Image (cartoon, rainbow, N blue to C red; front, side):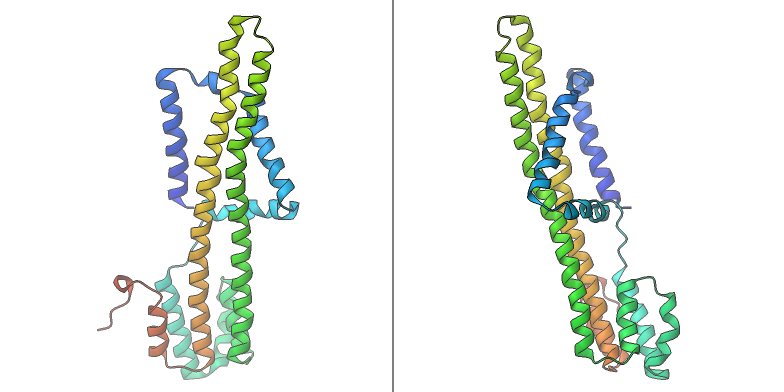
Length: 253
């Protein structure tokens, strides 16, 4: 679980609620019709703009903003050093028994292609295609969330206009103007809240997670290609270390 996302959401909403309760009661900010207009309208507008399949896939992609399970690059280097040394001592086929122990499907596929004897160029083409479509899926998810971040404030303004029209139609009773105006403004509040605390931050986090995952996959691909070419383990280690910041690289004695 990504603690930064959880803490950020709790902190942001918690401080907003605390600020509200310092001067008034939270109940006056709860309005079901306003929530329906903003949330329902935002989802509806997104469905108009994107295929329903993409909208459904957003839920799956968004889990990366809450449940991040990224491998440690240094662990990846250690594993590839083990694979490279094993392949150098016992041959490339010695990697086949360990395939069933690997949980990372991308790594497993790459090593399987290597064990099967495919040419490095062919392996690279296949694995880079997977990276490309991973980026495409994540980019679509971030784009949809960003679009929803734009729609939410606009729907909030629409809800406000609806409320103002209803208010102006009852101007004959001055006592209803204040409460009606408050309800009208709540939709703008909901729209701004969803856009700036949920949709746009989640889009940004998804883009960051995508870049991190792509970098790790490129690192894995570099190791797979080096093993398939029979390169020296020391050279493989240097190549993979180049993906790390200098302060994170393993220092040899």
